[in-house]
Image 1: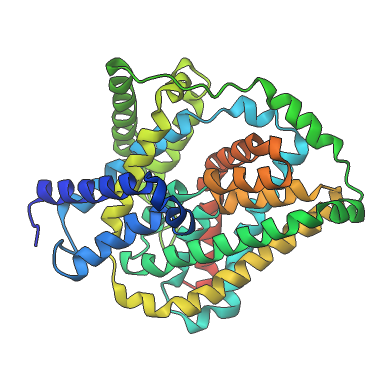
Image 2: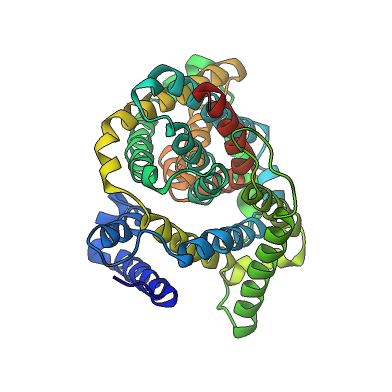
Length: 391
């Protein structure tokens, strides 16, 4: 067993480095398209603990949860192009927000219907999943830390996130062949799509080689922002019974808000030299630490969790289709708005490009906007889930 805190950190970093390296090999890319990096980043450390290589508890995990999360969120938020998102047009933003609303209300309904067959703390795992389905992995970890989701329950949640999320992506891709019929049925005005395409023509995504000064600035921004927000969060009161707004929650909300505010400053240019990529490395490293604390026995409960996830996704889809019918939104915005929430920055551009090849950037920007609303929507969903669970 690796008991030394530094040695444990090095081991987790080495495992993650190996996973990311393998995911970039051309021969293995098809495998990582089906089973994303996040699965391996979580479950390989879980297996390491199960066979006795790593401990189930360590000060290393505590430090990682306390500082790597706000560090990664700071770098991800400061690189959000809020101006470009606002230029997407009303239809795109409405459908992205409707998709988020479908997740917020769908979770509590699914828990009310099927929750009595699952453990009493299932609501905390569903709260974490709501974060993933409104913005992606950063929000999942943030909500997980906020409501205190047991590490043992995260294994099934990660599986549900992947199986249901990618299953729904497959459904959306299938219906791309039916978009003309859907648009005709709802009376959609597809000129909006062309307008969005023109607005995105000038969006600059050029990246530059990172210099030493750039990397130093990225690390300084991430760690200083994280430390300040954690320090302030520790001095603010907790709210709720059970606790919904903890000291960690305050830190997450503060770092999210601060990062979004700084995205309007020249610091946002750090994205050109890879600030968000550094943030994602920190996030995956944190997920590896969470995985090392998981209990494989909980995986046996996956079929029940999958049922909850499937019902939850069905409610999300129903809300989107209903609103699309009311506001005459094209199926493109229904699919992209849904995947911008559920799939995040990786899946949303793929779905967008299948519907309209030139509009992959729309999916990307709609997914990035999920970062901004994911924390707040996830906390609202967590509160509703706690009410349904009677916690």
